[in-house]
Length: 223
Image (tube, rainbow, N blue to C red; front, side, top):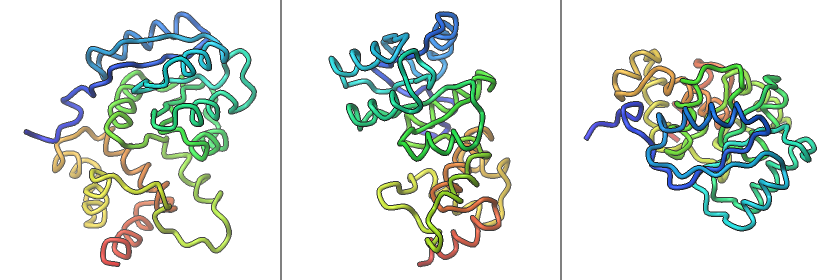
């Protein structure tokens, strides 16, 4: 069996799509089978519907959540979901591509953030990555997350947020100086997935570029 995650579909039993625009919910449902086969989809159009759905059944395998749902204030809906269903990964979709907002979302516990302006392929890769236990955040947010750390905090792996086994493999290859294309070929995954892994690695190690990641990798892997 190969490790070509982009060639496989993540298995998700139940997915909640929360967005107040019917056309966007329909678009998400159309995209979902490319990433999650045989998924049963539930829908919500406002914060109350999200809370009701999660309160009655917290066993969703994935929640795709629009930040700006009617009734939501800031990250209120995301924070509710993270508290009520802490084991369910959440991918936030939003028309806001501000790095500060993406940073807040990441720190609030979302497993992914996909701007609505992103191509559908990006969302597909984000879902596959998150359903595989990874994290997807755009590269532009890693610097903001890095600066959100307290002064003097060592750039080490955050407690409770370890690198996944796939991220460890990507990190080792990155430390060897391999390009995203080379890493993708080595691990039999797409370059988009590699970029997503690299973005997550940057965030978790508290670095903002490949050189810093390679230096931290040598300390982290040999320490």
